[in-house]
Amino acid sequence: MHLAEEHHLDNFDAGAFFSLHDYDSSNGWTPEEVRRTYGLEDESTKDVPADKREEVTREVFKLFDEDHNGVIERDEWLRRTGAGVRLPDFGLGPGHHGDDEYEYEIHHFEKFHDENTKEEDLIHPEDIAHFAKHDREDEEEERLALLDQQAIVDANIPAMFRRKSRQ
Image 1: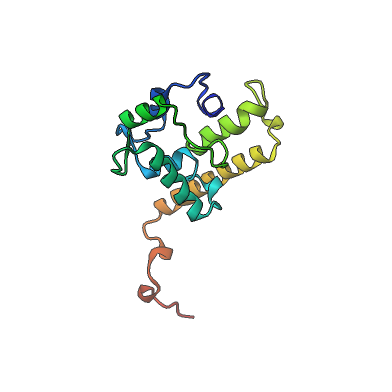
Image 2: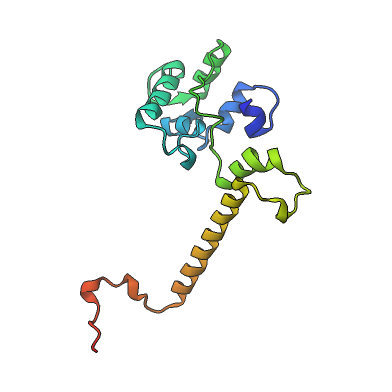
């Protein structure tokens, strides 16, 4: 299910799966990459307790890190998956490990919209939240551009160095 939904792949290929989730292309998975694969580095899982995050990492490394060096190397992954070992389902959903645009496309737009969708059709709460975030980002970008045009930004001067205004 994950490969079809997240990566548009119809069959499981252990090597391809490993490469897709080796985010830094180091030929090994770090604890951070495992958490990211399970979506635990995404803001949508901010309410997952720390002990659950630790459990996910611990259990995955217990299954795949044969030499216990804190990295799941590609060879270890291929040996273990070849022996039938699979990543456990911790009940956290499909995992969110792309940027916001990718996640919106995969988890919402592709399911409920298509290339013929007009802007006025984007009325789901997910659409509204997605574009509201874009609006906030655009407003912040404009605000920063205005500040960049100022020779001195008063708000950046510590209070103790500001002149007291005379009335």
